Image 1 (spheres, rainbow, N blue to C red):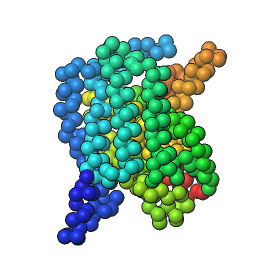
Image 2 (cartoon, helix red, strand yellow):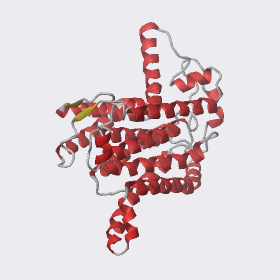
Image 3 (cartoon, helix red, strand yellow):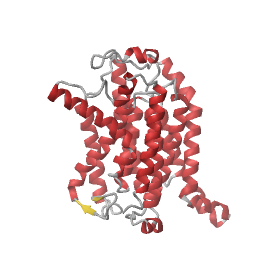
Image 4 (cartoon, rainbow, N blue to C red):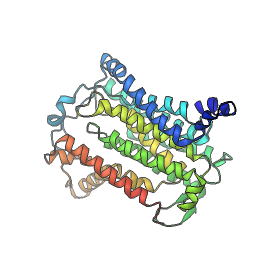
Length: 365
């Protein structure tokens, strides 16, 4: 909004020309979303407490008592993802080019998946259970989102030429898969959304990794939308995607604001409202800038968390044996005797390493 209000005023005062620059607006988007989250945090936490929106803790998982480790967390307000999503939305609307099709698409996907998560959280709380929305129905809503956006982006003049293209890290290969790209899009967006949801099990773990991943995709978005940088790094240039830098910066800022209250011991949890919405946000950005496979690297922690569950289930069904003490894998290390803060900080370190590896692929082509 500020871009459309202040940038045209450069004709009267040259200082307004600064609103042209994505780096300037991205920086202030991060600061704005951080301040919104920090300032609104106490109000929302208090409101959630008044509504008795407390997190139920699993009593038994695979024969191991998780409740003994996390019993002090029972009753901590959840659905704090509302705070993150609200901060991202306000900041992005203020600082991004809100008429940009990529920004509109990213916001729509984020709000859609956050709404799915909100319903999931509400059902868990309403029935005082760790089970919420049925997984099949949740996946169906994720597929529906990808179908709606897929059809729209395939025919929208600005996006139709690049939308069905898949690029690969390390090699200069561009593959146009046509309508089948929508299936690939479902895997990326739904996979990212659900992987972040699985990671959200310890204080600060998921949001810390989201902050790191969003910084990575902010950099990738800026490069993809900047002709000279894209040409120099031999990566596809997609006009307009640079505005997603502002969106990703807003996620990073809101994440840091939320971490202010979610750091151990957490005063609030993001719930599925936050994890599904933010995971989908990162996934849709990866789709829009054609850096889908990089999500496996930059979001490496999320991939490991998801794989740990898949392998555990597969092993138990085929061999009747578990390969981990508990899944997702962060609980395995808790069972091994690691303190919660140690698990969280070490996973953050791993996420940073994955981010650096992901950024290195820009020159390894």
